[in-house]
Length: 191
Length: 395
Image (cartoon, rainbow over all chains, first blue to last red; front, side, top):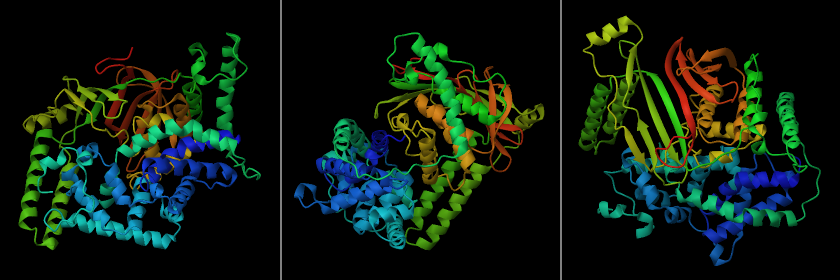
């Protein structure tokens, strides 16, 4: 595959969804899609310099572009707020309280109490499966700092899990709307 | 634990949104890029391992032969036809006598790529499963329920004593593990058949049908006598025979990110697929306890029984051909009487994993897990393909 256009198409088809998936965690749909297009345009110009694997590099470019946005439509939003906004009733149906001991809202509430970058560290480790060197490269920090963030996020989340259901429940920062919460809140009046 | 929980927080909507945006923005994004000048630098070409070159040449040779057939029979444009446009008559038997696993797999790769790409609403699979019975289902459920009830009781009792509670949880987990690992004092097997229709549309109902005829066989007459001595417990589970379910089903236990929708986009090039499988292996929740060889076998079975493209199938065979430790065991007959070539890879503790592959079509006929010569599991894939409606069987 030496043809640049072919190589780029392959890169786009392989990674567009991952890049947009990340951008959607930081910005509204339109802005996220613009950032993803821009990311791939940068990738096209730098096609011969792309590292292997290219995904961490692409995510790093998208992350920088998002950080640079000044326009209010594009302003970077809190990760946990975005996760909450993207959550639908299907996620609630799929959630197994028995398995996790804790309900979904409480898990999100516990996350919203964490520093933003700690949650981001979890996203790269768990949703993207990036090894620490790659995730650190995306976040522009040292592997050591990344590992500290990841460790801290896991620890706090684990603490929150142990607190449930007997302990004090952290207050949800974002109130899910009727749409995002589906029918589940009616069944669970104590929330 | 926290990672698993966090993984589940990922909103399902994300996948559909990115999927939809990919379709909608692809052509404009690609066009915008191609209009933009690139920085002029010499391309860094990667050097491929000699073996991969050999594999590539073998497949290319067969493809070239097929091209002549295709262009000879019509006034085809000068471009090379894609595999899906090739006439089925161009298909040849893979090899008369499989020499070794590697050449058999490379030949299978050449066969697979010439199958037409297909699509449909439901992916149908009929599996005949022959499995060793590890526990008496009734007893097992009773014991598990008792343990879970005990756990709940203790959780309430000890909620203000975190130290004791943790110890208690550990103890119950150990008891559950013990129960799961216990073995019966006799060797017995059940044979049953299941039909599955997996909906390709996210959120649509899939159907699982279990044939009511489940048979039990014993390892030896002595095993049967021991079973009778144990009070002839029922070894088959009473489950509902038809179940419609619209929840997302896991396609490949070792690869939680693969779905029935996204596997058709797995790479079709050998190198790209190999890289993807390497990444998936690293991400896999099982990578700590599985060797790469066993992971590849298991994932290979999951993919071969799912709707992947002919290109991915072909690439998968090439990746397997490059994997050490796979040996050909010659022609065998599967549980439903079909003939194929058995390929085997060794796991830990004397467990052996086998695939039986049809020589003419490169289809997976059966997979098996064998421990010290004794089968633990044998699944014959009686039929698979596309169906338009739940309950329809592909022609």
